[in-house]
Amino acid sequence: MNRLERQARLARSRLYFVTDPVPEKLLDAALRGGVDIVQLRAKELGDDELVAAAEPFRRTCERHGALFVLNDRPDLVERCGADGVHVGQGDAPVADARRTVGADRLVGLSTHARNEIASADGADYIGVGTIFPTPTKPDNDIAGLELVRAARYAARVPWFAIGGIELANVPRVAANGASGIAVVRAIRDADDPEAAARALRAELPPGDAVVTGDSVCIPQIDWLRGTNGRASPHVHAEHADVFHVLDGTMEFRAGDGTVRVPAGSTLAAPPFLVHGFRVPEGEAHYLNLHAPGGWRRAPEGAADTHGAERGSERVRPVVRAPGDGDRLTKPHRLALIRVDLPELAVVENHVEGEFEGPDRHVHLRHADCFHVLEGSLEFELGGGRATVGAGTSVVVPPGVPHAFGPASTRARYLNVHAPNLGFVDHLRALDHGEETPFDEYAV
Image 1 (cartoon, rainbow, N blue to C red):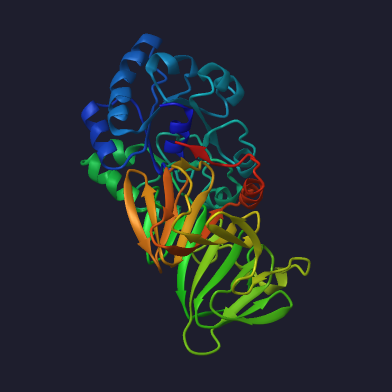
Image 2: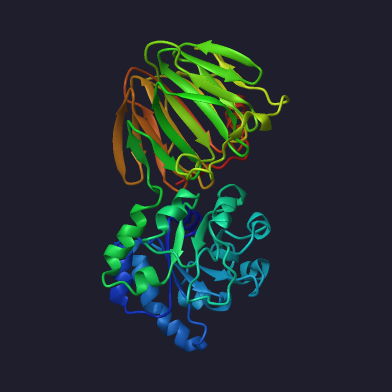
């Protein structure tokens, strides 16, 4: 793999298996069950012994398209054919490990507190722990689920909760915000490693694209479908809350005012904006987007929801009527900028059949999501294709190669990027024949 391929594989990884040397048969079973990354931890071995022990790891991971990482031996990454190295706070500094392994390989870092999570400069991913007591690290302080909740919004790179995680507690770890987990005994000591890995993986958010008429929750966005319902005035401190009305009428408290909006309207509540909603009459259907994700699964008392008294009068809502928004045009496409916040961008596109969508590409840091409002789109997702009609959503997590274009004479769809990362500025520059840096890589 080259660096882009490794980063893309990392971005869609959810299950990380840390182990001492084990039989290749066990590794093969774990990878069949859904393990994405395998780390070989064997500090007691000499150089030549470690290189020999690493060979079946490299071979098996390559066969399954998984990543293979060495623990704390950047100097042996090249000899072992590993995809990267993992270092602890007391091991080689990240900058030194990077110089040793080179730019093409990955560097992971263990973190144990919020300040370490937020300042993991130079690392491609981080481990977050120790979450629960574990005999593999008996002297570590136990951080508990509070550290998982902190990492949900503080982490800037892919991360994996680690420490005493097993099938009995992984639902709580995921509910509190973990998008990935690292385990040792839960797979290594299982009677059936393949079944154990598959059961753990089933509790975690999807890492592949999802085509659905229902809700999807990934780390970057909670993509929710709603019917009727109501919510009293409240605020979110660390994420944006966006509604797009599909049909019917909705009424919103937004800041210090109230607005009633018809189908086709979009309302965005940035962090600390007081907001609430109800359906005043009949029935309404809507998309409700929370970015970053993690709000939907959070247990009571742990969600990023607070009383209206924490609201800020300086924060203003974004309200767009049907057909409203900054207009960007190019041949066979009209784009309406509906929402342009750091947490996400929402763009409504009107395209004709002659419109050429983007070539196959991948994003490493943000999700690319779609909802078809009229007509149909043709998608290339990972290794497959799908024709998607009106009423269907497509949620593409980071790391998944994709391309799309119209499959009908005309189509209208929402395109959501979470986080924004300058997507709207990128579109504006393209419409002026310019290029801007953006989280998009041709594959």
